[in-house]
Amino acid sequence: MVFSDTDKILILKTYHLKVHEAMELTNEFPNKWWTKAALIGCWKSALAQPNRVTGSGRPRSDCTKENVDLVNNLVLSHEERQTVKP
Image (cartoon, rainbow, N blue to C red; front, side):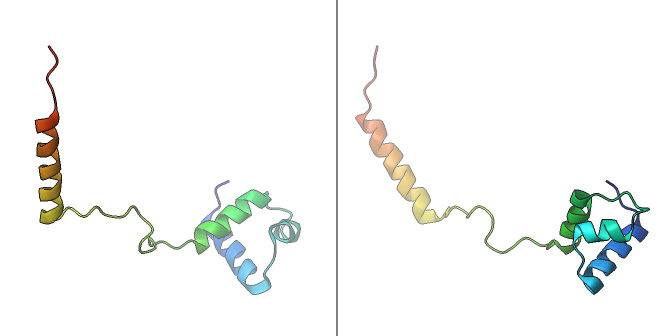
């Protein structure tokens, strides 16, 4: 359900001032065709944090000079051990 800007303001102000649940809001405004799921979605989108929480993403790999040298040495040591099949 798409709420108008006026409806969003009305929903959020009523929620903050009276701390209504979704069903109480639908009973208080019977002329609006609001559903419980739509009201909860409106609250969640309004109260959601817009910024990403620090450290919530994938950790960065350590691509340092020492690690690159270590991997190169491992690859070269395994190339010497490989046998070629005809």
